[in-house]
Length: 209
Image (cartoon, rainbow, N blue to C red; front, side):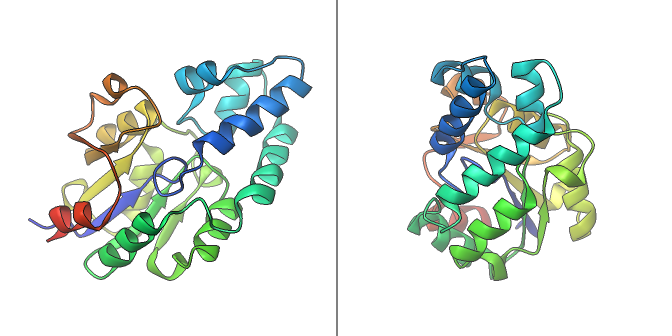
């Protein structure tokens, strides 16, 4: 059965920006007195929500650092350049055949600014961002909320992820999950139903027909 809804993670999946995320967190955490290495970011933090990244690394809630991360991200990525041609074409193709949602631990303002600049906002029906759920990935709350908003069952939807935490969240919500290689080591995506090299029209054709 062709899925009626596709649920996309944002950072590292729709938006090729995990390197930007890492750089910003390295800056912010160095300024906070606890430097972060690139390997540590991708091993321990990639895929978590912003509040959980800060809490995990610094051991405390620092909402002002989350706000600063969003500000720096907007300065570097709000032009939509992190969404490549292949991903744009994939979204446009998919939107003609299914309802689309973004499920992310990022802030809504940054998701919407990137989608808007990339010309994809009209194709995405719902955005479930960090501020709309109590717990971020690997908790399934974001995916469950997206299914509710789209009025779809888990067996009517497919999730696309790039991180271990994201895959765990999608599977906990009962979704078929396709993982995008590149952000973390392949073996950490083993919980996904399949692993692919790229988010492109060819993939959408296979998933949606």
